[in-house]
Amino acid sequence: MVQVCAPEVVPAVPARRTGALRLLPALFAASLAVTALASGGVPLSDMGVFGAYVLLGLTVPGTLWWRALSGTPRSLAADVAAGTALGYALEVLTYIPARWLDVPYAYLAWAGATYLLFCTVPALRRHQAARGGTVRAPLGWSWAMAGLVGFSILYSAVTFFPGHGLTWPGNGAPYIDLPYHLAMAGDVKHHLPAMFANVAGEALHDHWYVYADLAATSWTTGLELQTLLYRLSPVPMIAAFTVLVGVLAHRLTGRWGAGVASVAVMFFVVAPDPYGWKGGIVSSAGEAALPWVSPTQTFGALLFAPLVLVLADLVRHPGGRHGRWALVAVLMLAEAGAKATFLPLTLAGVTFVLVLHLIVHREVHRAAAWLTGLGLALVAFAQIVVFHGEDKGLRFAPLHFMRWHEAYRVSGAGLLLPGQEEAPVLVLLVVAIHVVSWAALWGGAACALRRWRPDRAEMVR
Image (cartoon, rainbow, N blue to C red; front, top):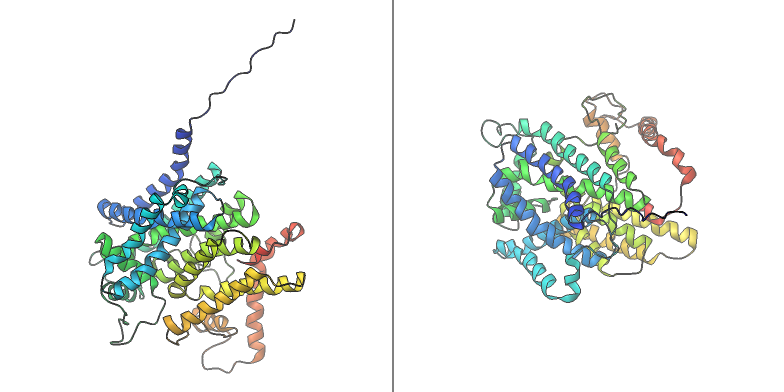
């Protein structure tokens, strides 16, 4: 007789314990950020107040609206990171009219109204929890992203904090642009329309929405603008942007490993330099301290990442939830004043999709056509309303960056120097140098062409 044994029952891991384990990577990254800030002289009380504001005033309400409007199930990390970016966009877009009307605290009404609506309206209440069909990120991916977020904060802080203290004499010789940023934030905190700090009576026509964020945060938390600019404000922006880069790579490729690889490439891959090695541990195209020394760039990149995520969904799946168009409008409107130079990138991407789809399929891609029109409208808004006719980098100037690099980054050793006649052969030679550098950067990806699959969403990057 054959004895049949009952199968061994493996006890299931309680859902509550699994949820706690999935929070550990985020707690690990947060602990690294706290360590970095503490080493930079930020009191724990200031960190607590700032963290509470970001969580309750930006991340939670922003995540609720992101879930309600995007309609595409994603991981919790994606919802929270994109929701944080959306929260920042809504914060500045509500603070500006509130400050203009001389009621700066009124901007908080958007967060209060969000909580009220999502607690009372049944159709919105269901977005409080993760949506059905939400993609669950592998635990290994979460730990890898937590490590990369922690690295980006720690390494950039190590390169920036020592030369930028919060008290005298440590704050006596900051990076040349930081006093300007601090003055602009102070001006936007106390009145609108804002004025240039270095020209009396000159209206502020610049990429200035990050100053509205600093001002709003200072009003609500009571923290000094210097503490926010030199320490606290870049931290959640760095974290959310880093996660969104990984989420976008996963979204386009369908592979979680691609998300980790994309962030690792962003931090660690060396950018070819035609003029020699510059030194440093991370010789990437972006400097380690860039998030702190260029808050406008940091804020613009934060808003650009979820915008590209939504654009990819709209191009790949044109039908479906109309709330995605509201997300595009809000993010592009905020981007117009945060760092308008990201708008031509958006416009170029959707226009390329429009033209390529027309050539291949002999029909107009309606979503891309609407996005192109919206992009043109927002570029015009930035030029006319935000910059009052000034270009602020938004102009058609072929080879301008190559000329700038030659003239100012090479210390007189370049081929195109100020004041000299530009012979066509020299211009072509500089173009060839940069093309070879790009080929060196992207040559390793050539083998992937054998497995390349046409995907319209991949064009919007």
